[in-house]
Length: 188
Length: 188
Image (tube, rainbow over all chains, first blue to last red):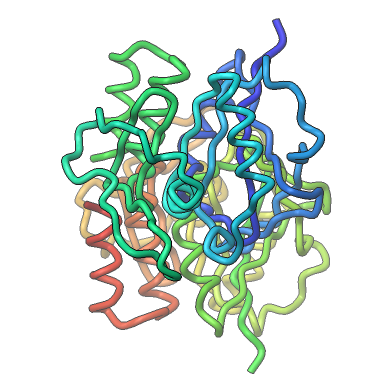
């Protein structure tokens, strides 16, 4: 069986540490394959200086039936541009019921485009989706440590372990017991 | 002033999450620049599927006077080969008193080549450099969460926040108070 795609959306100055734990485990499961996707094929340099090559481009991707999840790591670029093409891509993915997981700036991006307007909080944390005025008066959503609701997972920048756990649950990469064991190791 | 190099040694299937926090902060400080280095120029794919381009090769690097630190993230490759060229490079870097920071498999690699034989424990953790028989009878060193001694920093795979903090201290990227504040946020 062909492995299902898990796409990591990379933009300039993506945050090295935010999705790393999640994608390392997911890509180790044979029924998933992690690919990078971006607005163009130019390598995207992380905040830490890693030049990551791009496997797919937003415009050419058309394999939504085989798409298991879209992951949006933070990056400095989310604040600098609206990234309309990526927003259209997210809309398209959601129309196929593909879950979307965002952390840090990725969450701000989703909020800015209204994707989180009707998301209901079902996570553990109490202060979810606090609203505040954004850098140019737009309504932004600042997620608390972690939130998961239906097709959306959001997390803040220090919550990469919680973020990974929610992704593992949605993708069912292992039993709940094994995921809990992993979580205990990495959150200690 | 030319920024000083901080080199991240990449091998096949490097661990995405282990050095990410450290390099993101270090590369944000103007007096350092993070570069990837490897045995050859072929991009090195992380466990999570990130294809990282290589900035420098081990054989051609000769800028030790400007080298501030060498970082060895874990990778599946450390167990598969002895990586003699990288060991020679570490010897060379140490002859210039360049500090070396290793996490997870990177620590095993250092132990296998005898680099940690005379390292004295000065860190916080009590069970440092426990010895155990390696996969083929070699003496390996399994570091506890974190250890720092002179020019060496070692950490295990779940200690990326502690690993980053020790690197920040050695490179003096900020005041001890600011580093402590960073640590509190990310270790919470």
